[in-house]
Image 1 (cartoon, rainbow, N blue to C red):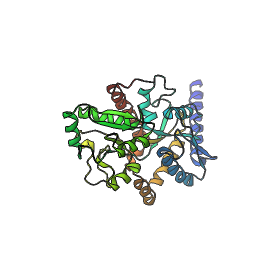
Image 2: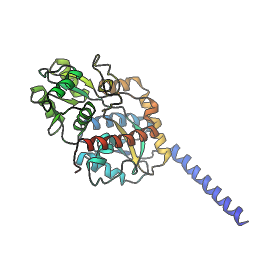
Image 3: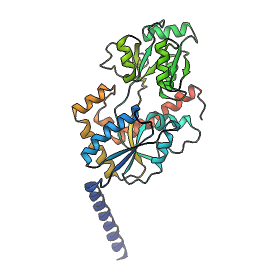
Image 4: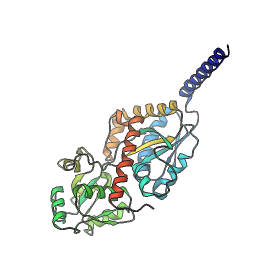
Amino acid sequence: MRTNFCMRAVMSMGMALLACTAALAQTYPTRPITWVNPSSAGGPTDSLGRMVSDQIAQILGQSILTENIAGAGGTIGAAKVARATPDGYTFLVGHVGYMAAAVSLYRQLPYDPAKDFDTVFRLPDMPGILVVNPNAPFKTLPALIAYARSNPGKINFGDGGVGTMSNLVVSMFAGRAGIEVAQISHKGNAPALVAVLAGHVDGMIEPPNTAMPHVSSGKAIALAVTSRQPLDYLPGVPPIADLYPGFDGTVWFGIYAPKGTPRPVIERMHRAYLQVMSNPAFTRRMTDAGLQLLTDAQYAPAAFQEHAEAEIKKYRGVIRDAKIPPQ
């Protein structure tokens, strides 16, 4: 009898849990949601987060507030979300920098991107464009590589600072090509791009939204893209992966929740996102901004988790090979 009683109690608890889960799925959200964005207002990560959150808020029928917490390469904001209550009302707008590369850039990262968060969905990628000054002694990617091999130490690239994606992707490219590229770090990508246009450095890897106006005007030449596929708006410009299969230097973004956030909440948010991404007019705004759309399967939580973990391993190798000391 005692065994039967225990079984009935367990079954009752299970049914109650299922009922609570179903109720949560039907009623969520009941109050405004916060998306923590660990970047300054107006930047690419902030703009993308707001673009998507505005659309999802309309579907959910609740406001999504953006809280910008910049500093320490995004790790301050990410740490706040890692410590937040996993109730479905706090999310993180993630970026490859502080959710993958930071694991190897910081000695004491105050969170574990793989263990302290649940992935919700991946956002479209931002490919980079390898641009050079028109007066540089190479006009194609093979010519750049050949020049670098014939003139060791003569090529220099600008970047937005040691450990930034513009710095790490150049390091990854140089390592795969077996060439030496001197990297001149600046206080952000904007001054690095100015240095390229002025001829103070040979080139850099820059996002499309800021690189394309100068490519279109002839003030810079696009030699390659960091995505695995060519970009429609840059016909004839090859991916670096054409020469080095598997190369992928795109910047990725995604939405994370504190570990333990109820699955119905994650599923609700993911479904709302897929609904947003089914709107051609909206996705056209994304591609016009230089973003690269993915498949629905790639946006999914499990696929995003797998990708993020692979990226942590990839950038661990890039940072080790580039001999960048942890901070």
